[in-house]
Image (cartoon, rainbow, N blue to C red; front, side, top):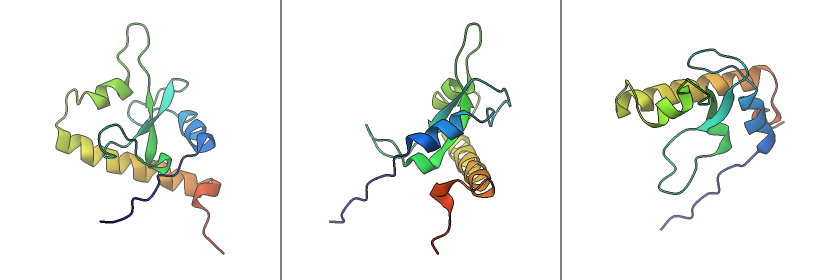
Length: 105
């Protein structure tokens, strides 16, 4: 058996991700911090594997809900998009100097 590592939790990082425009449609002001799927049943992935997706609002099914339901995509496509979205969000975090991604001295 291997010891499980605890996922990193950072409210400030999740809030920063939610402040970004939706990575899928680009709308500003409605984003939520969407976790990559894959943590297993009842668990969430590390907060550093999140990306901004917009929420559902009156008359609009948000990208977050569409993504979770795999609307207009296969599970394989969702996995590919997830890795792309996580990478793009982490790259931006590094570029703006988020403390979670600063290199150890």
